[in-house]
Length: 212
Image (cartoon, rainbow, N blue to C red; front, side, top):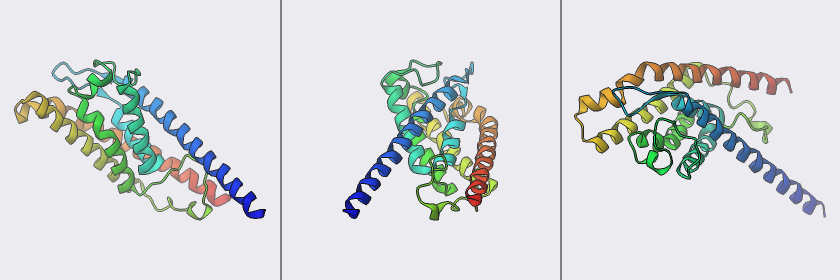
C-alpha cells in the first residue's frame, strides 16, 4: 500500500515537472518572438539586425542544453506553422526557413544545445527537484558563460553565412559583408549581456539555495 502511494506521488510529481518545463518552453518561444521583432533592416543585406541570438544564448545559459534546444525547436515549429514569431522583415512561415535567414534560424536548436553544453548549465528556472544538485552551478564564472555564449553565437553566424552563400552563389567577400561582418560587434555585446544576466541570475539562485 505504501509503495502504491509513493508511486502515485512520484507520478504526480513527474507530471508536474513536465508541465512546468513545457510552460517554460512556451514562455521561451514568446521571449524569442519578442527578440525577433526588435529588428533593424540593413540596406545592403537580406539579413536584419535583431535580438534573436541574444535570446537563444540567454535561454541556453538559463535553461541548460536540453530544454533550451527544445524551446528553440518549438519556436521554429511555431514559425513554420505560420505564427508571427519570426522577424517581420521576411515572408514568414516556411518561406522564412528556406529564405536568406533560414540558416540562422535552423541553427538555433543546435546553438542552444552547444552553448548550454559548453557552459555546463542546467535548468535554473524550474523548482529544484533534486536537492543534491542545488550547488551544481556555483562554479560557473562569467568568463565561462561568456566563452560559451561566443561559441554558440559563432555557430549561428557561420551556419547562417554558409546558408546564405549556398543560396545566393555570391562571392565570399559579398557574403561576409551581407551575413557576417555587420553582426560581429553587436553580437559580441549580446554575448556579454547574456553572460552578465545569466551570471547574476545563477548567483542569486545559488545564494538562495544555500540559505534554504
